Length: 278
Length: 319
Image 1 (cartoon, rainbow over the protein chains, first blue to last red):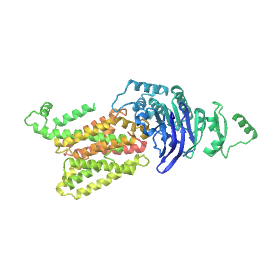
Image 2: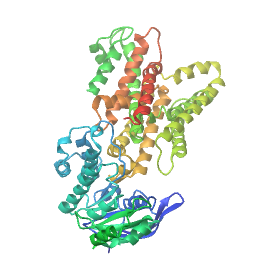
Image 3: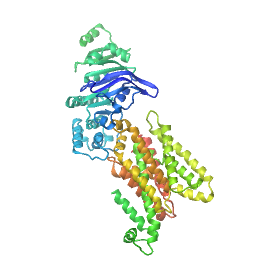
Image 4: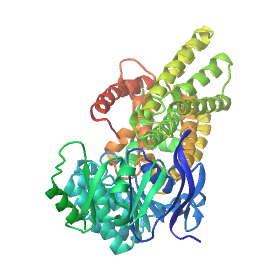
């Protein structure tokens, strides 16, 4: 029996439009996976289907071999967390209260807040360095702080699996790196399996153990950054020429796009780039 | 705090009026004693009115805030999006057109309220998302129902019309204690049902996706919440008439008092009761002429509605 999160012959979409086309996927356990692809290739749809927000038309999404739509919602929420792309914070809510709501799958209809809940919230605030913000109102925080608070809420949920839909959108580069570092810490410290949709290929290649490239509702390629991020794949997936060089910071592959302009084709340059690629 | 406020408002409405009855006498009468000259005033004139005001207020406050939280918009209150109008239209038709009274009217009002809720929902929801469209559709449906009510009234016999118009403006005049029972029963049954969904409602405030991620069965919760809130609102409407804007005002006022953290269900229910009690008292004794309670709450609610629309326009969000 397959462990972890898997998709089998998954067909899903909105209304009559099918976005995912008989997709098979095994999410590697305890690793960080990024889903990349051009706009409208079905990245977000896949994430929605994996996190039960979208019911498949055919096929299944399985968690430890069990169809996620047959698992009780609350039980599933104790194992599988999700941070949607633009969650809404109620006006005036404090950080502490928002993060506390991550505990709701662990609470019954009338059961009270327990010490266990307190500990989980404290640990989540600690891990995301939001302890100092605890009593601030969420709507007065900066974008980067707010995203950390939402991640803290997902952490308080204490799931083994966390799915995130473009967690770095609308953040400046420093905060993008901060969020990805945080997710890396989480993966290292708790062994949480992380799956996220990312726009930035280079950050995806740097931070993820496993990369999934999608085209037209199918998996085009999946594997390590080195295996997936090739000039060939970039051309097929994004329809653009590129050079793959070695990221001088991480040693992972790094993609440099080639447009129609500003391309210096002197042999010396080419050689320099070639050399870096090896 | 709110409970104390409600209790003092109740005491005021029982002791003060055309004549003053000391609180000790009121208590003696409530416990079954006789106080010459005051028993009739308290037992027949004031007590039913107070009880009915409280129950109607609790109902409007609870049902209203449940909708506002579920749809994440203070404008999504049942009295704005046509659900109260639906219940009113059915009740007016039953009272004036069919000369019905009692529980049948309530049942018709509930059915009409649910039908309107389903209609609005069906027209507004696309791909599981409703949002602002639902409010616009609701306002449109509400306008249609208002004209339907006018039509029924115009065709009513004159002696019935007067009564119906007074009822339509929302009033606890001539309240009888036996009217309170159906209201109390509905409030307890569906109120508890709503309270048992309070955790789910709190997750819905974070958006439908987030709610689902936190283990809330979104569609099922929504159905339970809609049925409960509509039933509470519709039964209260059938008894007292649509007391303007109480459902709409209670939630935001409660949010102002208790803050954004924690559940708003009970606080706004209590605020609703205080609003109706105070507004009815003001309508009876503090204003130059006697007005039904709905006129007073209407005067309070309209400016807030305008304020809210301006603010939502500017910031794009509220509640």
